[in-house]
Image (tube, rainbow, N blue to C red):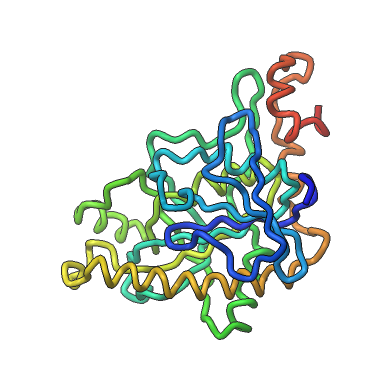
Length: 288
């Protein structure tokens, strides 16, 4: 499989290190101006579509959330030709109604990270993309329909709070997040969504609820073994949904994700340096 001909990217989070049903697998090392992605991309065919799978934390779970090179991961997908990204990640629940084993497709994010780079831009090229609606609604629609066909209920909507980690929340923090109206809490999706938007790719995520966050009175009764078991079962369901969703994707996009940069670049093109043009050419050449 050649680079630039892969249409769909899949990011597997904790517990989802491979994609069942992927055939004709090739492992591809992608070089980026931002360093190395988390792992080799595993490219192949899924439901007749060319896809690329990336284990977010590396196979064997070697990379903590704060150490992830989000820019390299997303840029690597873009270099492979990806236009749509389906992500899966483990989350804690901040609502009684979001029970362990539930799957949410959030439509909003709230940023509580502190040390991460969330943009490709800077160094002489400024861009401000719209991020009011951070998830591609059309892609989320397809995921929701795929869940129904698989017999795996998918809850649509809600807010994913992205915390820094790698430690989990204090009880005080957890209670504040509940007062703020957050639904689930995780450590990875916010940067992926921002960078995917800058790279003009559709993005949505399956938030796999493994347990209640520490606010819940029964939290102390939950064991790591139970959490891992929930994660493994939910990962199986997530793969079913992703596989079905991939088969439903149209060849052409009709959403606005593919033109996110059309009115976002602020810098005078004549002032952009050759080094910056070279680094970001994959994203901006058509506009400069």
